[in-house]
Image (cartoon, one colour):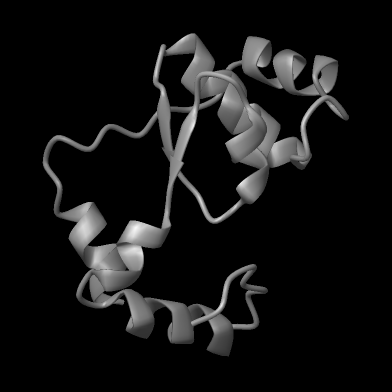
Length: 98
């Protein structure tokens, strides 16, 4: 849980809520990319905010032009393995190997 607490401790972290436009973007682009609906909503948000990097284990983002996915780099961060095992123990389905 240190990983989550570390995220919460970031004073410059801003929580952004999706808008109806982001959700419409997701439905309009469903099937265009190998992403589920929630990931497409996230894609709508990052495009609206002109963000070009996403932290995700979903490799579907790799096929979205103009978006760089980072995830593998996090595996080497302190607490990442602990976080992954904790998520797995809570029955979250991980789409990556620990």
